[in-house]
Image 1 (tube, rainbow, N blue to C red):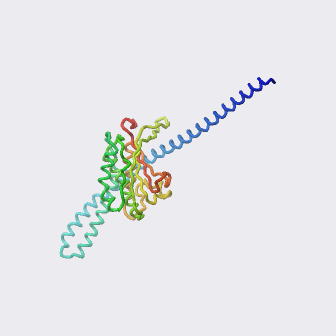
Image 2: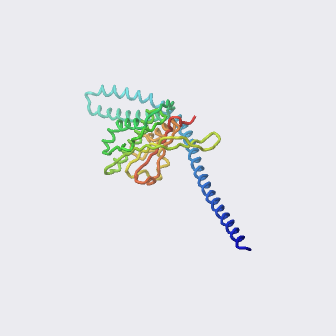
Image 3: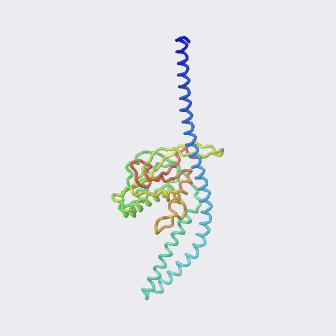
Amino acid sequence: MSAVQRTDLESLATALLERVDGLVESNAKLQSEVHSLQSDLQAAQARLDRHGALARLGEMAAGIAHEIRNPLAGLRLYSQALHEDLQAMPESQELVDKQLSAVDSMESIVRDVLAFAREERVNPQVCVVADLIQIVRTRCEPVVKQCGVTLDISKVTSDLQIHAESELVISALCNLVRNAAEALREAKTKNGVVGIEVEPDELPILGRDGRLSGRPAVRIRVHDNGPGIPAEQSDRIFNPFYTTRPTGTGLGLAIVHKFIAAHQGDVRLLPVGSEEGILGAVFDVRLPVPGGEES
């Protein structure tokens, strides 16, 4: 074999090896993309299944709440009349006051159940996210101060827009902020801070053909510097009536999920420590931008 032939053969072998290396690298990338798409597809299907299950539970809860509401109204009426009749008997009147307080608590539960069960007919409009968050700050200011924490919205400076019904989004964000503030108070976190950040993002769409695609969205992140939510609770926190607190209905996060899902958006809790520089609970709310909503 001549030197020229040997050189040509070596060049061909080198080219083949480079081609094989390229194919191996391309195959690895394709496998990674397939795995990512499969994970997104499973997550999207899980959200659809969850939405259906919550809708069925909501119908049942609404029926129960309506059945309880009328007797509660009668109980309140009779208790108020008894309170008036017992003005000369303060000790007995005090017992009636406790009964009225219990009625208030039960009525609050019924209102939460009906809010959770109510079918939301969303009337979306173009909203500037920064404007909505200013309203959230105003509404949450009393509870934030009461809990002794700080609400930091200094990173909300963009003019990003979403296509949503403003009042429902504000209500959902207020719920997340209040939960975070109360969690910081319960954990006795020093220098507790609840932060809100806004960035462009993308929402996955599961088409009728089973294929996954994406659409432009805005991500609103609500996070705190508390102890976070344990992993064993993270899969259940959006479940109706699930709570780790001695008081409350356990419907707050379920209602947040309902409001966001009504906009074809999603809300999720990130694993503790998954975001650099954030040690506490991290909730990501993603909502479609104008023109990016699913038809």
